[in-house]
Length: 67
Image 1 (tube, rainbow, N blue to C red):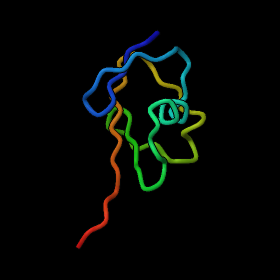
Image 2: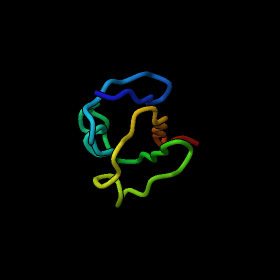
Image 3: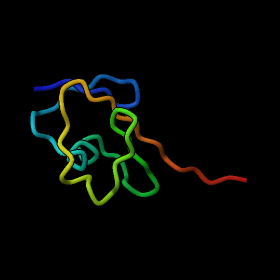
Image 4: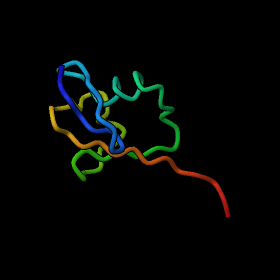
């Protein structure tokens, strides 16, 4: 198990977990979100290949509608 931070909350996940798998495990809809790891934006095309490392700081931002 490794420890990562997701939106300032500590999470324990399996080693070699992809970003996409983390999103799935946290039941987060992938529609309208952007993700940064350690302040670097990760393109949606790379979510399945991006492996998470212990200590990663993950920020998930969800777009909202309004006016």
